[in-house]
Length: 249
Image (cartoon, rainbow, N blue to C red):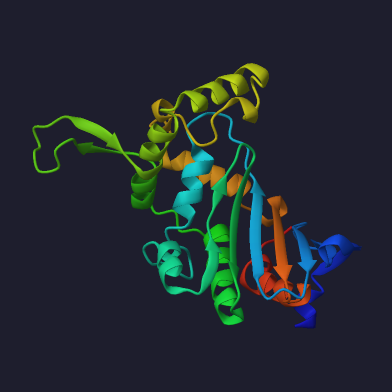
């Protein structure tokens, strides 16, 4: 374990007495990835990997990538491992989020074996996503007959994110929030809809999704955050073994 853990160097440590935790910040020597560990005697262990994702348009590329990355990976090439684990694991929390300039993949569990299982699935999903074209069509956008059994019916756009954002952007408050962002922050990532505008989502190509993944989903663009009574060294051994050792500087 020592050889792998030595891949990280301690940058900063401080005690936060009001929360009864020890803040520890590390840097991965090879890739520059950050690891923030909040050491506690709490057995509710938490893991999150967050990446800076800065879309330049409203096609929802970061949002669709968040969904598609969880549809199977190199070590777990099964359909929808994320929802399988939600149903079968002992997790107390599992999710993924896309914001204006970051994407995060957090989970929590009180069972150490379950925690380590989820850690392997999450690391593989983020850094070795399969990104199957059919999953892109499912999560992003595709054309279907309005009446599935009637080939004479009109073609309509469908997709998990497409439908989600149709609902999200149907509210007046969402439209107002987006308009304010466009006015205050033109020509920046804060002026576009990171979740995706339904009218723009259909412009996103599979190749653009792949390019965004290659550009943004690299350890040098990642921050790992852990909390609980599992030590930083133990986390770092797993992170190194199942993800970071495969990447060059």
